Each structure stands twice: as structure tokens, then as C-alpha cells.
Image (tube, rainbow, N blue to C red; front, side, top):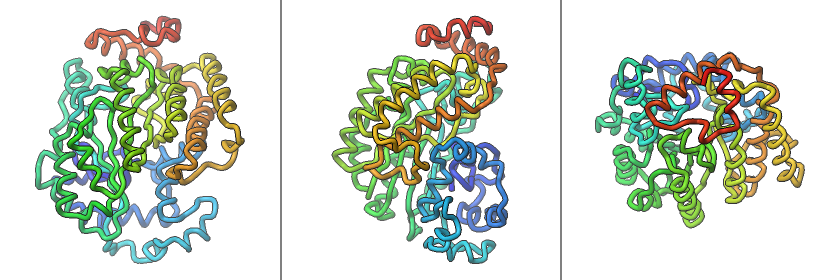
Length: 413
């Protein structure tokens, strides 16, 4: 289950495309899960696909480890051995029970604490970044600045924390922003979980943009059973400064290494989260080089769909060829055991399978670039978008990505 930046209640952390009619401010989260989600469960058990699940099915199609597959793995269900693994799942009795009278509560949460953020990533949206929201409002991209963080109200925060702490089967809580480490609610959330719950039994995750380090927060994190650290970066190259403006690559690299050391010291699970776009593709391999060097998996949960002018598919087929060749060469060079050709690894959290996860993640992007139809008609829209941002930010994509000069000039840059 998910709580979005604005407090909306959603039935899945990856089903974030469509609006929900339910909000933490006016709906009891327990009732939402137990009552309002009944029709969704009924339809799924009847074999119906939901439009909100399109991102996961797109990943499945391209051999990427989808959020759907990750959740199935958690309950012991293998999509390739559906019937037998379902019957042996410890959750089988729940699926057989009357889904209109569910009494249990969620055991896996993704909670967006708000949009307070110190970055304005080029592919982000105003509800996820206060800095981007202010900029977009100034530029006329949006008419209104999104509402303040729902987590600013202690009553809202207490409702979710009490519900989490009342679960005797809690598996995972992932906290995200905005920039999580600067959100006031992040520290409050951690302290309340320590005070009210049993942190030694809780697996806690959070995502950070590698611009902040806090000894106080990291000391608090050591009280939990396990920590999953998700680091957001588009490339270990100065281009990252443009894409995740106004970050600085030297600081990003420094904080990343601090988190590598902290994770090794405390046994935390560290993973790289990247969101490939048409702009990051030429420097994408720098992410996989870094991950391979530091034995850290690369794991993202969708192919970018919005904004459409930043999709990887916008890159013309003719310009994909050199990227395809370099990616394939990288895979061939690192795939010394020929493991990447096997079926996708479902459990990406095994430390001894990190290298395979890295290879398979990159191969999924390779497959996408080979098979996804070209949408280069969006290039003029991309150029207009970049020009408006750059006028405010006083930078230029050509200083970071001269590879694209001819392409962008031909489309009005």
C-alpha cells in the first residue's frame, strides 16, 4: 500500500498514475485497505488486469524485474510456476478467504512524506519536489503550487504510524520525499517507530538524492533490524548536475561512498535507483560501472512514461545504434559466466547475485531500446521544455551533452 506526496491512499506503490478519491486527511487508512480495496482484490482474483499495472507489465515484457515480481517473491509465488507456488504460499489462505471482509492490514508500505526537496530534477513533477513546483509556477508550467506536505499534520502522521505498529506481520516500510533526509517528518517518523514499535523487527527503506548527510539520522537508523538505502543518481558524470539540478557531482560521489561504507559497516542493503531518459542514455554506463565496482545492485521499478518528451524512445533509431553497441559490449565484457541469458532473477536482494542483477537490469534497457517504437515527434516539445528551464537555471544541455547538438539544433534549440 502507498501514501502519496499529497496524502492520497493507493493500493500499490507502483500504481501511481491515476488519482485516488481517498486521502489520509479524510479517510481511515485501515478502512481504505480493508473495505475500499475489496473490488480491486475481487477483480484481480478474477484474472482482470488493471490499467494502473501497466508499468509492471512493460517491465515484464522487457525482462526487467518488476515491482509485481518483487512482491510475488515476498509471498513465495513464482509466476513461472504459478499454481504450485501459489498453493504453497503462506498467504494462500488469505487469498481463499472472503475478500470483502479482510481483517488484516498492509505489511508492506511505501510512504511519500511530502515534496519538500532541495533538487529540481528535470524528469520530476511538482508534487514530488517543492523546488521544482516553485520553478514551474514561476515559468507558468502550472497554475497553482501543490498543497503542503500532509505529514506536517501530526494527526495524519500518527494515524499511519499507529497502523504500522499494530501489524504483527510487518515486512517493509519505505520512506521517500521530496528529499527524505531534509523532510522534518522523516526524523519524527523514525523516532515514533522507535518509541511505539519494535524497531529491531522492522526493515526500513529510504531514498536519498546524495546531496545530504546526517550523522544524527544515521545513528537513529542503526536501531532498526535492517535498512535499505536507495540512492538516486542518473550518471556518475557532470551531466548528473544538469539532470538533477542543482546537484554537484563531486558531492554526489562523496555521499555515495559514505553510504557504501555505512552499508558495509552495518550490513545495510544499498541499491542504485536510476531513471534513464533520452538525455541520460549516453552516460548511462557510468552508473553500471560504479555499481559493478562497489558491488551494488541497480534496480528501478519502471520505464519512464511521464513526461513523454523525456522517454528513451524519443531518441531516433539512428542515434540509438552507437549506444546499443556500447551497452552490448559492456554486457559481453562483464557477463563472464553467461548468466544474463537465463530467466530473470526474481529475488534481487541476494548479496551473492548482485552482479547478475546489474547485468539483467542493463539488458532490460537494451531490449527496450531495440524494440520500443521511436517517438521522435516529441523532440520539438523537449527542446522548448529545455530552453524554458535553462533560461531560469542559466545553463545549457550542450555544455553537458555535446553529443546531441546536431539533434537538438535540428529541432529548434
